Amino acid sequence: MCKKNNISIPSNTARGGEHGYFSRLGYRDLHARRVAAARYMEDAEEWTSEWSQVIRVKVGAFLVDALMDIATVTRTAVDKRTGDMVSEDQPAFVHSYEYQRGRKLGVITLNNMVVERIAKDSVRETLHPRHLPMLVKPKPWLGHNEGGYLYNKVSVMRYKESTEQQIYLRQASNLGNVELVYAALDVLGTTPWQINRDVFEVVLKVWNSGERFHKVPPAVFDRTEPVKPENSDFDPKAKAVYLTRMKAYQNDKANNHSERCNVNYKVEIARTFLGDTFYFPHNVDFRGRAYPLPPHLNHIGDDLSRGLLKFGESKPLGERGLRWLKIHFVQFVWFRQS
Image (tube, rainbow, N blue to C red):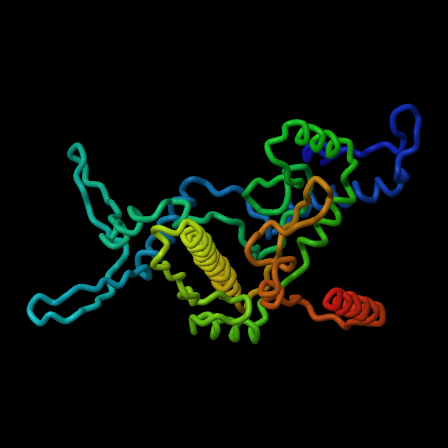
């Protein structure tokens, strides 16, 4: 089992005969946890084997068919006879056939409105591949790049194109020096979460109103554009002031759009997982700080993100929990007053 899953037991003696940080018994307990996790991955029904190509084709065909049934676009045009604006819901995708080299092939074509939108916007603006929360518990961390999501490979540590850090991380994992990190990330990853329905309904109401409310930006930028002074053409100082104000206005307008998109991500993700229990797989940065892999909606995000979330399992606060709640309250009040 150990050899198959690339699991090693570190010795309690470092180089040069120095004692390690943990006893042999402590390492053996952590090692047993990883072996049990590996066995759980192999034997439990929750962890399925790789799908065959036939299964992938069947599932993909079913999902494409479901998408074509529900995906629509609203097209608006002027009626040539009456001159009135007419709106109509049309399928976003259409299935048809084409002949290539004498063979009849099924193809999926896009609605002209979808084609125009794709041609107008860049791919980075229309497609945002991001990690999402998981509806099942994440895979236990068994190696430096084995854990978290079921199929998407992620590293246990975040680094930017550093081969040296990657080598050090792999070696530390093979020696068993990051067992406690793996254990801590497993605990964080298996903590269940849910969407707070009451908060979500309030946020959705504010969002649909399109008005500014605290940190929820308005649908239409509500700041007045600076007026160009009449003497700006021959007064350099007035022109400089106007350009400075105009630049600040453009930046605020762009930030409003960016914040609107950011809140939209949070609302849509919360809507998708409403009523479900989900999990956040975690990894660490180079300092050892743990972060959730889903970037848009998580429990260490802004006030809106944390307000939309609640623990999936309710537990009594207890005496120790009440003490830490008081400490947090005192620190919060002190921070506000300082």
